[in-house]
Length: 202
Image (cartoon, rainbow, N blue to C red):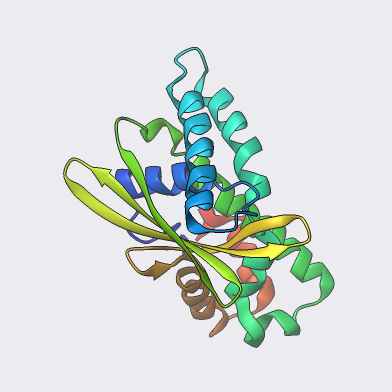
């Protein structure tokens, strides 16, 4: 079984996922306008990397990864995809291995698509507080089409981090949880880890 990296995995959607997530630095802004200004600054920095013709594909991936990785709470995202039903049943070793493999899956999913960048635009619309979390709504504008994207942040001791995102109303966490639940309905945690570790065999 090959894992679907993300719903709506078109060129435009993947570009939006790549561009917008990397703009989200420490969001200690006091209001929506300040948050949007911070995102705009990050956007400009990422676009410089993507448009640099002197950088190779691998060099761009490395530069973007430096910006992107600290923005996500990958361990939390891994835990949320399994939820209370499966996560508590795992050993610490299984949890660590699953998290490692899941982080690799997420990271490579968008970094490998960096070469898709052309002339799309990301419009940051607003940021709102929701139950002590921050939701940032954006639109990807591509050849007259708008794709809505919602990024969800929560405050940690190290600043604001992404714990989920939605594309056209479809949650990344829910999408992967459904895939993992399907595997675990007939298999074990070790079966799931095996499929993540060797996707080419499924």
